[in-house]
Amino acid sequence: MTSFSYIAINKQGNKIEGTADTSNRNAVISDLIKQGLRPISVKNYSSKGISLNMNLFTRKKVKTETLVVFTRELSTMVGAGVPLARALASIEKHSESPALKIVLGSVLKSVEGGESLGNALGNHPQIFNDIYVNMVRAGETAGILDEILKRLALQEEKNASIKKKIKSAMAYPMVLLFIVIVAFFGLMLFVIPSIGNIIKSLSGSDTQLPLITQVMLNISGFFVHYWYIIFAVIITSVILVRRFIKTPKGRYFLHSLMLKIPVLKAVIIKIVVARFARTFSALMGAGVPVLESLSVTANSLGNDVYRKTLLEARDKIKNGSQLSSILEDNPLFPPIVSQMLSVGEETGQTENVLVKVADFYEEEVDASINGLSSIIEPIMIVFLGTMVGLIAASVMLPIASMSQSIH
Image 1 (cartoon, rainbow, N blue to C red):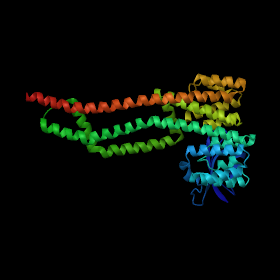
Image 2: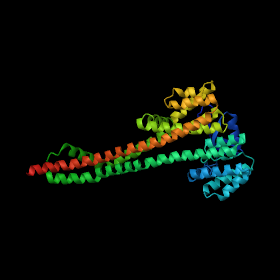
Image 3: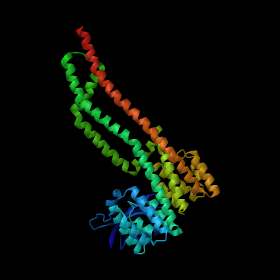
Image 4: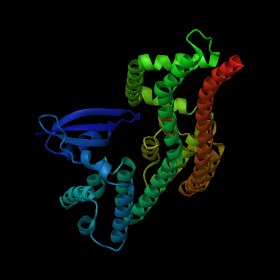
């Protein structure tokens, strides 16, 4: 008997974690499905409780570009009639990614052992996410695996493109923020004390300094004498906040807060709506049932507020409601989403309509990210300039005062 640790989603959309002792991993998956649970991750553990799943060591080493190339190659070979096992063996042999070679070797063994490709990929959730696995399973069931793999490759490229644009747009503001923080502490700990000593030596210890100069010296003095307390408080706060954010309650609070910040709210809505439209349309086009598509999409958006909204919408659809009418009065979704969904539901073209929505909002994301970047940069520059200006004023005022007393 082997011990397995699993993560699954129940019918209410809640995450269930637990362990099971059985002969193999497939038996665990089968038992979970019989209980009405949807398996997300099933890992093999040794007797010491240490994970034997190599995915833990390969997730960060398999780049999105590598995954896209693998998906496109597999799609081409399957579409050309190459047997699945042979296609996997060929891609494994020629892959330049050591991490992907390890994973494909495991997938190949599973497929040769009679396991479906979807289940074989599901053994490596750190690389092949829930959307990927569900679409492959649907493609195998419908006999259109090559077409589904093309859609997956396109989806991975779109997601990677958005992530790159976000990182690129935020790179300069983050560097500038780091410089501002370092400059602030450097000025408070080293520059201001030296300037203060010079001013006091020139004007005398009993001289009444200007208010702004005295304030800056007091702040600097506090930093100099209690710097260890300040850094300890900052580090402790960061650790506690990070831990809180990792909890479901903390993550939901953070996502709710982000949706209340005026400028940031518009950017997040566009990003999430674009991801929702692209993912949901891909799953629907792959033949995944509506309720299952909503569940998978809800857990892939990266925002717990939207996740809760879509899971609630799924429950309402069970009672006969239409998705377009549910989202119509929801402020998290722009009116165009419910309008386009309504058209898709009436014409039976929901998939195609959502693709157009995704294309539209992906273009909007570009403009919004650039706009956000252009707003953040001048704010930081103004903050840095103000800080330097205050320091300059705190130095020049007492000097000017001394020069007047000399005359």
